Length: 311
Image 1 (tube, rainbow, N blue to C red):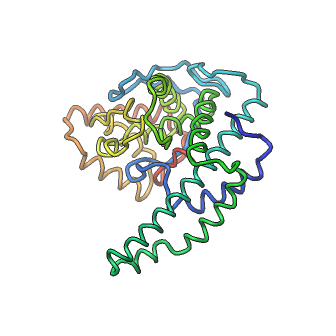
Image 2: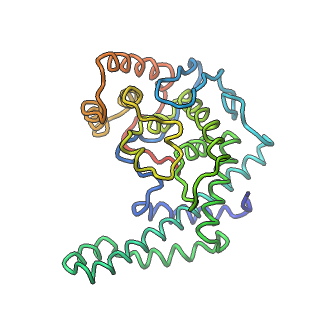
Image 3: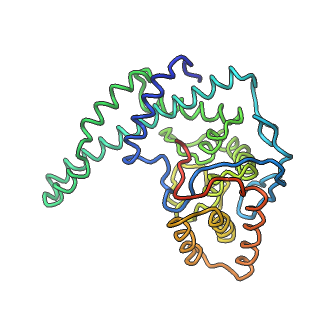
């Protein structure tokens, strides 16, 4: 499951390529309705009281201890050398999967332009403009995939998923958020064991992240039913129902930390919800958001845009 820990230089190079092509492939399809990543300290903050809208109860954890989940559920060895190895494996496999996905996305767009040339010649020029430089980027990315072991996309995706699961269980917050977002492409249906594991672990990870003032957890929890309906092979809908009351609460919480254009976007989303809200939902939601912000998010970074859950 773990990659070699001696390949950090290659991982750094892969990171550059991953971010250079990320505009053409997003690990999350929910960027227009979420909040930017960020986390704050949890010193002296009270325990989180779970809102409505989750299919599994979000348990209120005791105060978090250093380098450990507030639920105390990390598994395996906890020495720093092992955790560094787990982190390296997670980062490297994530970057390899990201580059491979980007290559696949660009190839698909190039093929689509080829098809347009024969079926709708009038649109070809615009299509070619949008894919300008893709051939060179694909070649550059393919050269770097040699450091990933020349594996198939299916193998890289499976390795990525396995490393996310292990890193999340080791308490690595980025991996936990990535796991909850469930932005994986294994090319198959989820097994009953994987679904059960997700339904058990993901609510705890969200719970811990909210108590730590992590805006990414807020973004995941306010995923709308419309977005959830398009996540055909994601497990996020196993713990997030997208009900109007929870979506509103999370929106108002995010708004307390948002700035500039993103604040206005959140206000518009709250003013025109996908589902109707009662006056009681609005009053209770506003009070909950204010209390939650004061207890957990006062020292979290300001929000200026959409999040990156798995980068």
